[in-house]
Length: 316
Image (cartoon, rainbow, N blue to C red; front, side, top):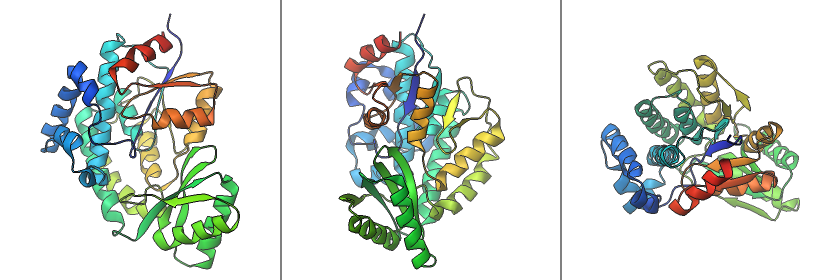
């Protein structure tokens, strides 16, 4: 009898040059998954993630397919190494939700690769370079951040700034117009917040500046088949499990311009008595966030071969 566990998939921000190279040396599924994606994308995705250039990998139109495929390569490895241990729940941080939906059988791999490529392109086109920005705010209450965002928007008509990621207790990301972000940072620091820093990102994700990207992606959804999930997926925009195609699509579109509720996602898992989580993809960003949200949850990432056995033991 296996224990109940969840799997979570990272999104943008977990990418790095050389990611999954060690895993690829031990499991053929990694290169095979990247080769399959490269045929779909018509460029060598594995070469990009191994050799760069880093600036290109960090451009969202390339980051999004790279992260989706990296996540799913890790999931293929998990299925083989664990003899297909199945989680009780799936979730993904922002873009990672697409990986979760492929793992759940909702989206076909090829459809998902093309969707996230388009998603990245639409998000890049939604905001002129230099107009938008994102900033990480550490050690501040959510209410204070919200109040500062609202104050700046009320003072400067037409400026957009809002919380984009509720990542952990005391770790929130804001997004919007760069001028507005800078004003919010000034306000926060004047009110005792010591750390609020601009992030090196190419688009201001999860704010209203991305609404046009959602509108374009909605048209693409009409050409894609969305099946019923075989494993429940917790959507991080509304902390709900959706079964129907219309509701799943609605959640995916809303998450482009609304905040990622990662704290509430992990709290939902805890409320379902899930205390074991496997992070499926490069890095261990989500494992770090989970530890800050709920120290009673044990989280293991599987980006390297030596961690696979540890994760399997945890979930058996």
